[in-house]
Length: 344
Image (cartoon, rainbow, N blue to C red; front, side, top):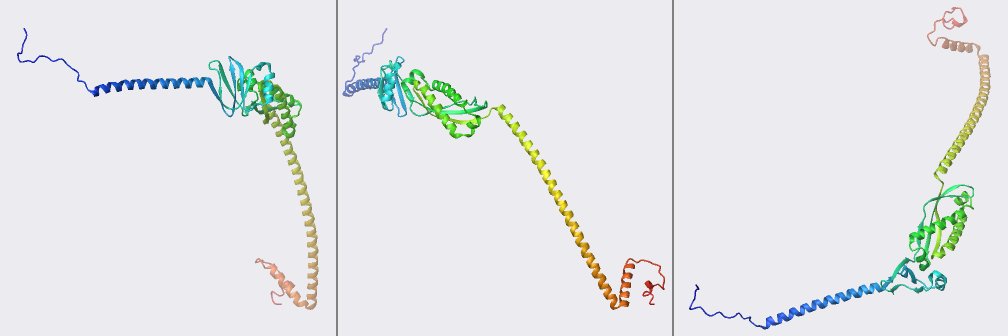
């Protein structure tokens, strides 16, 4: 059973409306897709060019020198200044046959995946040794702390012999310590400590001898210096004990000499005091005797001028002394002593 509507219109087919807008929209979408693909291709090409450029080139800085190796064999050396001595040293060494020497800094080319680059500094390098014990000519032991300034003079030789600074320091330490021990064995301890001129000459000799041995490694020592010279701990303790004993002995000697000098000064002072006292006593007795004589003369002269008054005055003086402390005395009223008391 179906429902039929006699008034319904027959179905019309669906048609897309054609317009210029739709046409140009499709064209623009295709262009954007092609542009994006082209940009990706360009970027990929640039990346490949940069990668290829980095694989085929390398740079050497202003403070660097480089060595190019091919399967581990040195084929090229790039140094700051190309000299005849450097070229001759490389050409005469059988280990460096066929090595090309180039000069300068900047950009250089290499074969990718086959050649590799090793860079080394051209500046001075410092090797600071560990403090160690050495023995001098007079069998004294010292703790020596020194350091060395060195540089890589031939990067090609350094590459095939040392490779790294750590290996170079190890080798340098062995050679330098050996040469330094030889020189220290010819000098006495007090010379090494006090004579700076001798020490500088000795270090220059060690530098020259060390350079004669490390030249085959492409290295050169510029300077060797001693930072510190100490005594071993046990020697320091013994020296301290000897110094302490010596100072105590000197202190006792100074105290003994001081006491002896003090006793001398005291004895001399006592002697001088006794002499002064004796002279003063003699002078006092002399002055007293002269005073007594003068007093006796004055008394005699006064007595001779007025004996009665003199006798009266002397009697009053005796009264003054006798009755000064409420003294009670028993006297005869007829005696000469009581004559003035009773008015007789």
